Image (cartoon, rainbow, N blue to C red; front, side, top):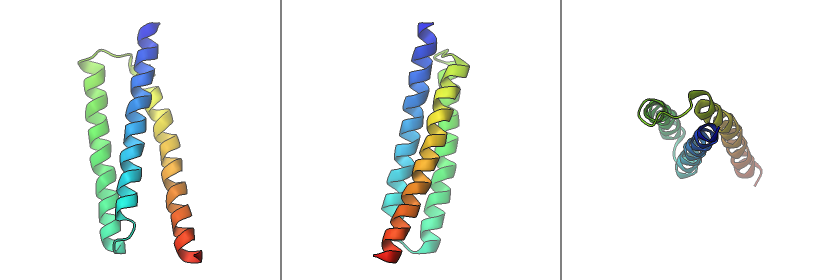
Length: 99
């Protein structure tokens, strides 16, 4: 039972890191031109997703963590992180548009 909790917390930590890197990247690129911003954000999403898949695979195969708990923890924070990223983009755009 303890391995399930450890796996869940590792998944939550990985999801939090994924979200943190995404928010950092968007904040960094917000004042750039639109084409550069879109390239940075889309490229960053691709790199983050590949990195997350590699890290999850290593955790499952090498560290032998519980698969469902690891992916469940990561997936839950991943979805909440996407909501947070979109909310952050929207809030920043509204502030720039309406002063």
